[in-house]
Image 1 (cartoon, rainbow, N blue to C red):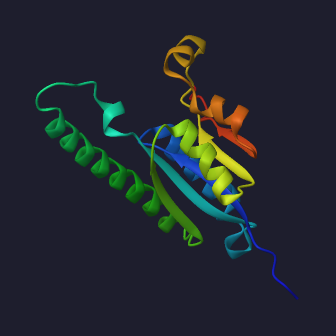
Image 2 (image 1 turned 30 degrees about the vertical axis):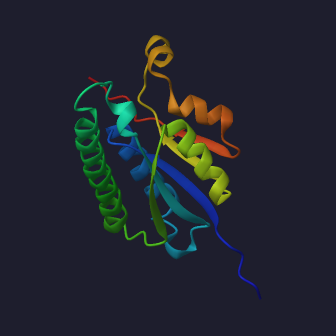
Amino acid sequence: MATAEKQVMIVGIDDSEPSMYALGWTINHFFVPLGANSPFKLVIVHAKPSPTSAIAFVGPGAAEVLTIAQSDLKRSAARIVEKAKELCSKKLVTDVTVEVHEGDARNVLCEAVEKHHASILVVGSHGYGAIKRAFLGSVSDHCAHHAHCTVMIVKRPKTKH
């Protein structure tokens, strides 16, 4: 009997608490209780900003500043990836791939969905209001409208005071 290939579930991560919460929530609900019987292969994707988008500097010394920014962004991406791998390791999730791609998170995640033929894209929610979303943009909103798969937006429960 031929074994069916697992569906791909992509989780988008960044350095924020909401994205790590979304990763943990996803692991706890789709991987830990099912173990090796999970119907999904987990692909974790981090979108590393390009150095030119991280700084707005032109003129003498720009090349040096870009080199420093590139180095800082690589270190930051490595730290984020390591945190995600540790979370997976603690929960004994082994069927996982971690990728880092340079670019805007909205585009990187939608492209990853296409590349992997993902069934589900999971992203965290920062809980911004309409005004902040309008100025900062919303990765989850963009993905919900443009990704060619189901998009699950994981929100952290509100704490009671």
